[in-house]
Structure formats: C-alpha cells, structure tokens
Amino acid sequence: MPVRVQTADFDLSAEVAQLRLSNPRVGAVVSFVGTVRDLNEGAAVSAMELEHYPVMTERALEQIVEQAKARWPIFDALVIHRIGPMQPLEQIVLVAVTSPHRGEAFSACEFIMDYLKTQAPFWKKEQTPDGARWVDARESDDTALSKWKQ
Image (cartoon, rainbow, N blue to C red; front, side):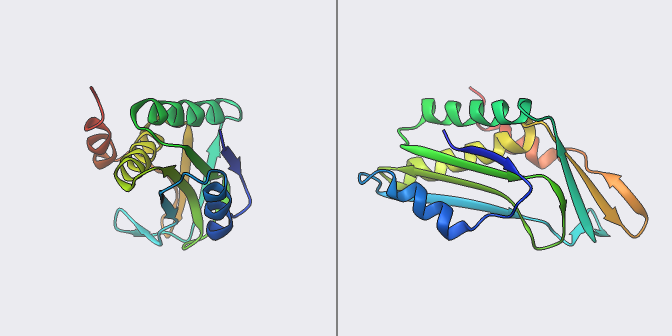
C-alpha cells in the first residue's frame, strides 16, 4: 500500500501514471493535491513547516487507506505527504485513488483526505508577519469528517 512521508516534492503526473499503470482494469483515477496557501485565517503566510512522528504517522495513513478500501471497491490508493519547511504554492499532499468507476474513486479520495486532515499526526507551524504560530484543527475539517461516521 503506497504511503510515503517525505521532505522532497513529488511529480503529480509521474505518480498518477505509475498508480494507473499498476492495473489494466482501472476505469477511474481521482487525485487531490493540497498546496501551501499564502494567506490563512486573515494573515499572510510566508512559510510553513510540517512536523510528524515517524512510523506513527505512516501507520495512521495506512489505516486510513485500509478503511477506504473496506468501504469502496477501489483498486489502490496513494498518499504522499510532505514534511519540513515549505513555501506558498508548494505541494503538501497527494491523495490518488484508482477504481473501476469514478463514483467510488471520488468518494474514497475525499474520505482519505477528510480523515488525513483530522486523524493523521501532523503539526503545522506557519510564519506570519506577527511571528510563528501553530495551526489548530479547523471546525470545517471536523464537519467534513462527520459525514463519514456510521
């Protein structure tokens, strides 16, 4: 199950192509790329740094993908999450899902991202004109997660 936590950037086209080519029955590929914003909660953001707990983070991401595979008939999923210092416009995260049909792929991709935002052990620190600040979870992320609760 492809889950990677890394400092290096990723090539969206290459990653999706590799995932797609792993199974000739793939009828749909859905991907999401999250990027660093230059504005958050009304403040300019000049840089962001992501921290994590190695091994614990990877295992949490693997469990999220396993849950998606248990809910939908998807073939595969890829999660790449960057850590370390980043600048606005840089890619932070890639979630890509393959399945026989688009509906399952869209749902699984959204599910993985919603769980990742709220359940994966990452910590974000932003650099703003007022200094560094840790970013708390947003209520909108918890609301998005609640639709998946059964």
